[in-house]
Image (cartoon, rainbow, N blue to C red):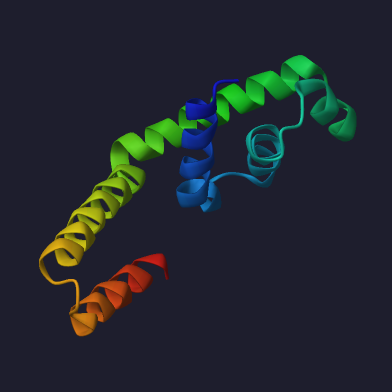
Length: 113
C-alpha cells in the first residue's frame, strides 16, 4: 500500500466517514488507519477476504465520489496552503506583530472546530 494513497484515504475518511455505513467505516478504518490485513479483517468479521476486499474497494470509490462532488478535502488543502502563505508573509514582514499572529492563530483554530 503506497503511503500517499493511504494518507488520502484516511483524510477522505475524516471528512466523509459519517456518510458511510457502519460496516464500510469499520473495514476501511481497520485497513487504512489501523493497518490490518485483509485476512485479519476477514477473520474478525468471519467473512471471506474477497468480501473484505470488495467492500474496501467500493468504499474507496464512494469516498472519491463524495470528494468529487463536495470538494471538502481539496478545499481544506487549499485553505491550509493559504494559511501557510499568510503565516510566512507575516513572519517575514511583521515578525514582531503578536496581535496579527494571534488573529491568524484564532482563524486557524476556528477552521479545526
